[in-house]
Amino acid sequence: MGCELGKEYRQKNLSHEYKTYSTQVMEDEVTRSVAAQLSIESADSVNFDDFLSDYFAYLSPEQAQVAN
Image: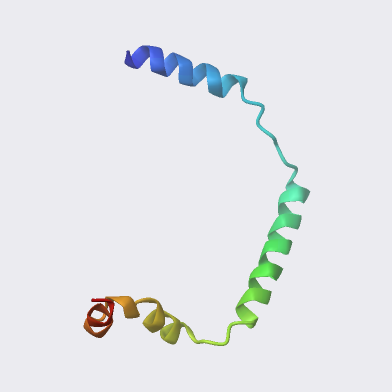
């Protein structure tokens, strides 16, 4: 059974048409991605500590009582 699954998996992967990208395409994507990340981060209005506090607020005992 395991060998059969292995052979099937191998055939599926060998027949898959993987795409390859040039170095330039990858470098362009890095530039685009970093710019997008900076844009998102510069729009943040909450510092990271406050974000974490809000994010994990549901774990506090007070929040558990409100839910019940």
